[in-house]
Structures are given as C-alpha cells and as structure tokens.
Image (cartoon, rainbow, N blue to C red; front, top):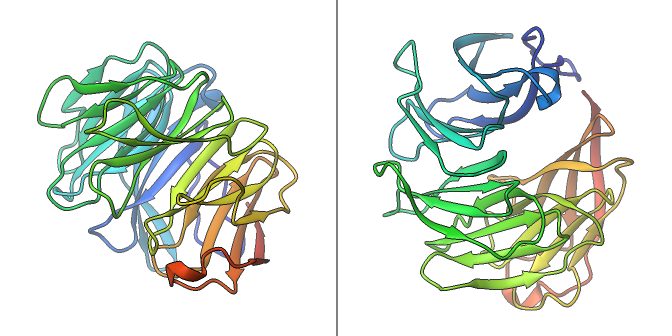
Length: 295
C-alpha cells in the first residue's frame, strides 16, 4: 500500500496493495482496508483496520486470508463487524473485537468476488456481492447461504452498491458496458443502462437524490445518470488519463464527488449549477475538477 500525498498521514503495509477502503460509520477516524499481495494476481490478502491518532495512522487489527481481498463493507448494526470479498469467490465475516477470524465464510460464487456492500436503509440487514462469475448475490448475514442470485450481466461484475434511499434496491456495474438497477422483490432486472462503450469499474448513488447515479469506466470518463431519463447522461466528467477504478459521491455535499484512477491520481469534482429540486435535474451541468492529488 502506497503512502498518501498532499501532506496527509500514511501507513505502509509491506508487500500489500490496497483494493478498497471504507470509513467506519461508528468510529471517527477509523477505516478498514482490503488488500492483496501482487496486485491480487497471486498470493494472500489482508484486512487492515486503521485509525488516525494525532498526526499519524496506527494499525489496530490485521487479519489474513488465503486469497486476495478486493472489497470491504462495515456492518450497519454492529460497530465491530465487517465483511470482505476475495479472489477465491468467498465472503468473510470479521469481528474486530476479536483477535482472530473470520467468524463465518460464505462460499457460493464460482469466480472472484469483487464487490460487497451492506445495506444502509433502516429495517434491512442485507448484503449484496458481485462476482466475475457474472452474478450478484443477496445475503442475510444471519443465514449461512445466499437468499437469491441475480443473473443478466454478460460480463464481469465489478461493483454492486445499495441505494441509500430505496429499500431493497441496488445497482451493479459490469464489464458488459452496462449499469443495471435491481429490486430484490422483482423477478428480473429493473433497468439496464448502456452507460459506456467500455468496461464500467465502479458506480455510486447520490446521497441527496434517489434518482441519480454516477459511473466510472475504462474509457477514463465519469457519467451521471438520472434514472427517470437514461437516454443520455446528465453530466460527463473528463480529465483522468487511465481507467477509473472507483467513484464516490460525498455524504456531506450534494454536488461533490471523488474518483481514483489507474493514472495514480485522486480527483475531486464539483458539479456546478446543480439543484436538489427534481424539476431542475435536466439542466445543463458545468463541471469543474476542483483538485488533483498524486497518491
């Protein structure tokens, strides 16, 4: 894992490369990082639980797995519990209050489990995973097997993420160039968006508008999608020079999002002229890349 730029605190874990990092919803300054040896091509994986202490970062816990770890998500009802996804197709449940783990292992995907996300809507304790076997799976952590398998993608699934607004609704991004929206109570896919002419590696929901998503792809672009009219994107962000690995909307600012890329940059973007009123979402959006930071 590389050090952070821009004067920020950093911690180096020798021989590991970070694939995903998620801040705890309970502990300020605490984050979990899913990492793999040899860029995930071979070797083992590590879940690192980190915390900012003063001007530095300390390693609170470290758990090893026999394959690379590609994603991590925090429990929404227990501040100590996390789930990771790995190259052997399994999901692992960890308890950071315990020195060893995992507590449970779910193994149903037949290829790499590349993404995992815990639902944030009240009344649900559901987890969704996405795999290179072209399926997404629905899990209840209290049950030892998947509740449902979602099929339809014709390529690797790179990203699966729950809507923060709509219970039982999640989006998936795939190497088949599509963004898809699913309802766990519906028999099939709810919406298919041919979002890019390249593999889509990441997607995220706007935290302030239930109809707005963003995608990041191998074509180096970010695109915004209004689910009420998907004939064309409501914004396109250009600036990265290599594939976009991950994109996230800010949980604090409606017009702010961040992206990281294989061009070794993290970029913050502000969408100007955006109104939270639904009647104005189709306005032309101006895009400003606020900041670029080398990592």
